[in-house]
Length: 72
Image (cartoon, rainbow, N blue to C red; front, top):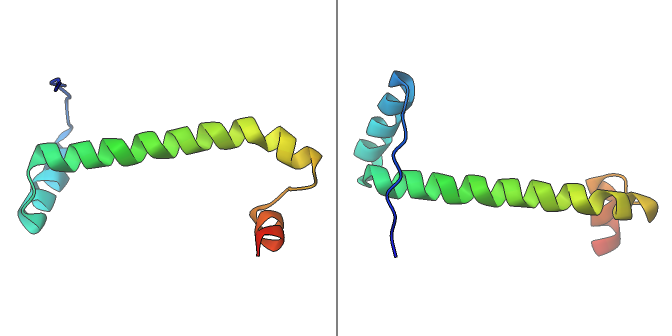
């Protein structure tokens, strides 16, 4: 099932989108769907990371380098 979403774009964002469509040969819907997928994935990752952070800190993982050190 597909749904339609209407959004408002300011002039600058509309110009960027139009330019990207011309450069890539992709249509607006494809570009916006891809951007939304990426943004939602990033937000989900950040949410999960915030939830896991207290457990990681309790085990001494304070930086990304701490994690990479133990995984390498």
